[in-house]
Length: 130
Length: 111
Image 1: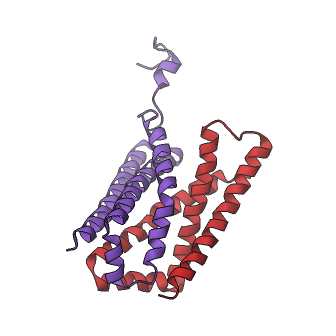
Image 2: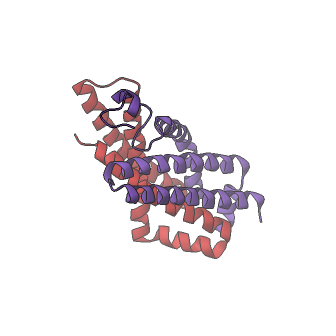
Image 3: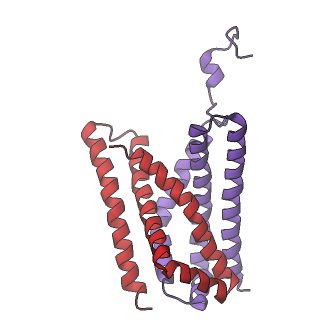
């Protein structure tokens, strides 16, 4: 198909295909989530400082308040998505064995989704007050 | 200056550091005993060191990321501009880390 005798030009063969074979969508999402976190970092740091030195009851009350829960949920979604893309770039840069690369990319997805879901579940549980 | 690799290294540190953030949130959702365990860890010498390192990694990655964003927009490619952006990110990352910890101690230290 893509051997020397192919009629497709070299550019046509590589267009939209990075090492991830999914084009430039990850590049865009990496920037999108980065800008989101740049906007969210000040409120997130304020929330963390609000929690320092508080016992469980105080911390749970703050974390369960609606605006704080929403800020943290947005930050968690942006950061775990950003993490997933960033780690995939690192994997594709350094791991050249195809099978190991696919396994690593898969493990990376599992890790990031697990961290995201665990954190989201915790915040929703705190918000529901049970 | 070879700060690109530091951007990548801090990104990797933050990747695994997120486990600490998840642990803290899950503990808060679990109850007083679990939350006390997290506080015992973050209050210990090694815990404080890890959280301090996490703060710096986050602030450096943020500032260094803004530097990359400036480049993405097509600015700052002259030699002196590159140097200024790189040093600016390095200094701003350290300064923000110090600022956050000073505020954290001033606000939370007495609680």
